Amino acid sequence: MTVDVEDYFHVEAFAKVVRRDRWDEYPLRVEASTLRILDLFDKHQVKATFFVLGWVARKLPRIVCEIARRGHEVGCHSFWHRLVHGLTPEEFRSDLREATKTIEDAAQRGLRGFRAPSYSVTKRSLWALEILAEEGYTYDSSIFPIRHDIYGFPEFPRFPVRVELAGSGSITEFPPSTVRVLGRNLPGPGGGYLRIFPLRYALWALGRIQSCDSKPGTVYLHPWEVDPAQPRIQAPLKSRLRHYTNLRRTESRLDSILESFPFAPMARVLEQHPPEASCSLSDLKARYPTELA
Image 1: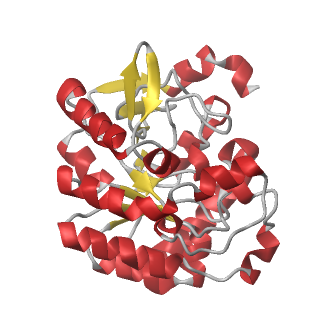
Image 2: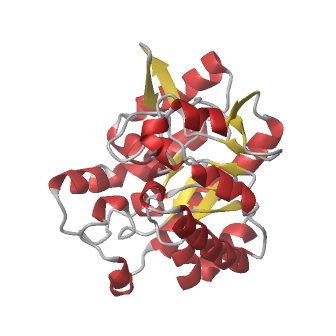
């Protein structure tokens, strides 16, 4: 179970209409909605991984402290919520270091896991895995093995895999869940897929992963998805449909999923179910040279 801790105006869907230098002008709602999720997890006695945006940790360190106090794992979701495949390696490392320090100071603990904004570690930004390992991260959850207009690497393994880096280093990649149907990967429950697809699809997908694949499945959501009263931002129709559809149903659907399956933080799942497969980063780069150019 994972939560990407960001506010409604941070999302990539609004990136072209909400400038980062104007974030301070928007009312913060992430603290209250994160507390709602924390209370729901307490109700079901579930612990999760919260990938926190560094900007949120700087503005609201008390909510990061509260996440840690309630026994959840704290991870990193970058500082400025920029797509990794739009950054240079130097820009990514700088953002990562700023986010890591800010979040660790608020949580009073070290970080092991990272998730990129909008799953933006793709074929052309695989170099990010090397930087994450160099900066002390042991696992990543940023490669979504599906096709999408913003992110996606459909050929990547569907379940946790150890990625061997240059030298003797490695990092574990824990992709968000997919189900394999007719030779194609379909997204599992999370974010817009949890809100827009029927609840029975989410339950079916998790059950199929558990029974047919015998692998751990994942769920992800954002605090703004349990906040239907959030301010409406004027943006293109496609962006508004992605962001606002079925916000009123997220919390009840999450409640049903928590009632139906056991969950744990990503780091704990990886300890109990270490990756059975491995792949080489150099082989991946060699296999997709055009995307990395």
